[in-house]
Length: 399
Image 1: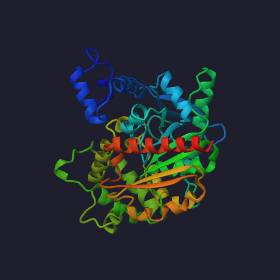
Image 2: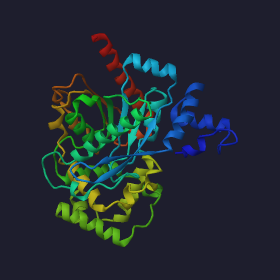
Image 3: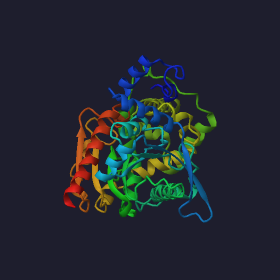
Image 4: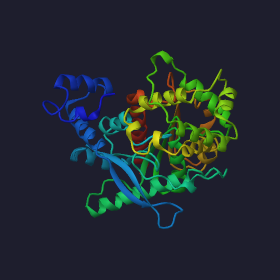
């Protein structure tokens, strides 16, 4: 993917000429009107200028966290007037496993430009340049609330953003929001919706993880299938530091009680498990989502490997189905027909589990794998935008 910085200025200021910019826009974002092209220039700039807000760390007296986020909003006065009359909510996106705000780049930019929404994207604690999460959040409890501190952190961050807007006399972030999430982020989003129903009007889960409680070996086997690729075309990542490899091995042994080699064999692997090769595949997946993730401060490569292990262990025990019956927001769930990590079979009867939700809709996208929202952002953003607009229409009809 091209670096947004090269698309910012145009003409002499950018790396490309006008024709090359328009070609790039068309490839990544579809054919855009002149007004949409102007808005995208604004959005590119905003995306590369992250902000920070300080919040109290949930459950930690006198400890603060700095949370990285971006606000994407290129609406003009007419757009904002229309949004108010329609009842639009601010769209807040929570990324998935190990991902900073950069991960869903194309999706969130299209939500801002094509769907004309105000969009906020956060980097969770221990991702991007957000503060590292307190180590005692890494609990071994099996109560289904492992991600509660992360959900509470996002809620506090949004409150702090609104307070800062109030001080600037620039109130734009709505009191309740349309909460959009992907993969592991959907566990956190659902937790937030359950804990603060008055603040979440819509809950959108894209390829949500942690639907059923299962064993780590079941997840590992599906991960191998999802990540299978032709090694001849695989660009290798940086050589892993031997100390880091040893720490990662030890972390998995501590949490799962077995070595990575044993896990590999039980998941159907043949021969000797190669941690370097596994890391190469992980990096390839991350590059597919966004090439910029790997350069972010505490994301993936320099994170404590215990966090990576804990997150996987917690995802398989999340039991998202048990929480859906407590969600009151309009709920929209998208899964992929070719998603091997979270297969379509897990979504059977999921619609009937959201018994308190105002509206429930479930879509299965043909041909889509787990990471497809990053590669086919136009389809996902259009579907989410249509759902949100439909919810606003229904609200207007019931007034």
